[in-house]
Image 1 (cartoon, rainbow, N blue to C red):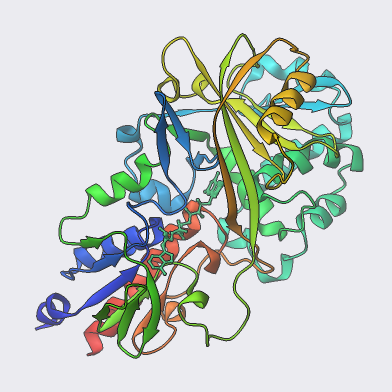
Image 2 (cartoon, rainbow, N blue to C red):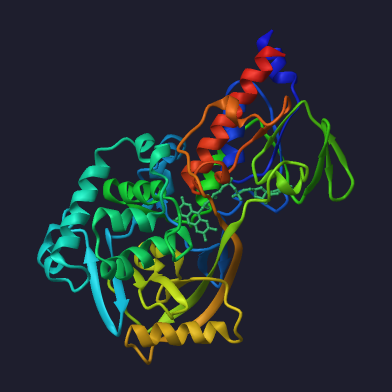
Length: 420
Ligand SMILES: Cc1cc2nc3c(=O)[nH]c(=O)nc-3n(C[C@H](O)[C@H](O)[C@H](O)COP(=O)(O)OP(=O)(O)OC[C@H]3O[C@@H](n4cnc5c(N)ncnc54)[C@H](O)[C@@H]3O)c2cc1C
């Protein structure tokens, strides 16, 4: 009887990002055959990869943190052929270049770490102390409601010098949060720091889109409709921008719902913006498998790396792929040339040949959240009797959060179907 309810229910999911795909997986496992409606041409949402001239270009520089709890559960890491960055970064500041490699993970770097110009001995000891503390703390605890001060306030209170904050934390976490004032609530900093301390920042051999592709390949009962944008939700019907009406019994909105349900309380979620520029590179060199951080305040660039040092498949043989992520979407003319020149200048490599491949301007890259939660109950995913919500904006903008919200929404739907 219960299976019939599951099989007969018209469950529709709006959005084929990782949140929607994980929700579909849970529904399928319980005998539901969901319909996923997606505005673009394929699955992945913000995680997509294009092929241009033999290069793999992710839509914005992104990494998979291998310690993510949900990612470990839903993804087959081996099949993704993950390769990873080294644990550290190279800091470019005031015309100097200094590497900060975690000596606990790469013991050969211990002396370089001690004598690195980035940070005082006290700052380095505090990094090790924080790493040790966070490694041993449950992620749920890192998000405790009482500790929602800004990341900057947390670092200052912890005792880090302003010089070290400016030279390392601002460009490092600024590149992850996509904002350089470190206003993002401290739980995110603690969580990401813990993920870096325990695991790796990795890339799938065939690009980040391999992640949603793998999730989709696990679905056998889900129907997909691409190139279909939902304009509005009216009672138990979706209306597409083409005017088509699609009825549903239960709906999961796996994206920000404000545009399609404008009467929802509150303003639409604000987002942090960024641009990633890709260049085919010849003749330049960067330290192996380390992300470069630009610590000078006036710079356009936030971070950069040669992606194919980590995953060789990202560039055709004999060429290299430089990824450069900016602090914001540039408005000046000739941004591609100005960014290339800034890279040549800060790396002291005036003859570096950089051929622009493609630029991704991402006005809605990461949700701007004032309060972060690590998890919630399936009941909290329920908006109305028939409508459930998912999407990274509900927890802490990331791949891991998106997956968890997909799971919680599906669990809520299944509980509701059982009561029908
Ligand atoms: C530049 C950048 C860097 C990032 N770096 C990282 C990182 O290093 N690590 C990390 O963990 N996370 C990172 N993220 C965040 C991560 O990509 C997202 O948290 C995650 O992909 C969100 O998934 P989602 O399913 O919640 O939403 P989305 O991926 O946004 O999916 C929503 C889907 O809904 C569809 N949709 C929206 N409206 C409609 C409509 N009206 N009708 C039909 N379909 C609709 C959209 O087309 C989209 O496919 C980064 C993101 C960006 C952009």
